[in-house]
Length: 132
Image 1 (cartoon, rainbow, N blue to C red):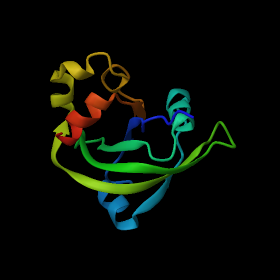
Image 2 (tube, rainbow, N blue to C red; image 1 turned 60 degrees about the horizontal axis):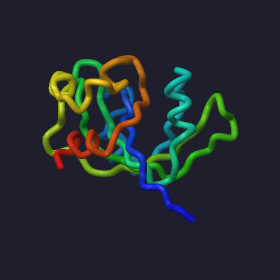
Image 3 (cartoon, rainbow, N blue to C red; image 1 turned 90 degrees about the vertical axis):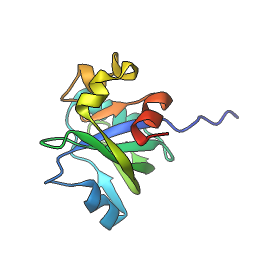
Image 4 (cartoon, rainbow, N blue to C red; image 1 turned 45 degrees about the horizontal axis):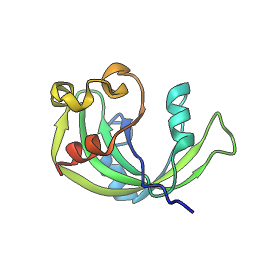
């Protein structure tokens, strides 16, 4: 049986609605309420152990922390519910301007579909965002 490596994703959130600090305080939360069809598809594809980047939208526009997928309930395919666990704050948060300047993201839906709230990442993109 082949075990798949964790897939990285980026989750966008409004810092004044639910910030990475809120997630750190709560330790775990249910990531739901996503309505965009492409973002919902990305949520349904998540697996426990997948790596996450939490990105603040609005005035901040930067990747601020990490998290991981605890479990996925996709029994309602239109409204999958993903439980996530807080990771660590990113020591040097990457701004949207830096992301757009990086060749790693030239074909990424993070840049090409700016309103997409759940974005798949490559391992190289994840490592760059966390500063590895």
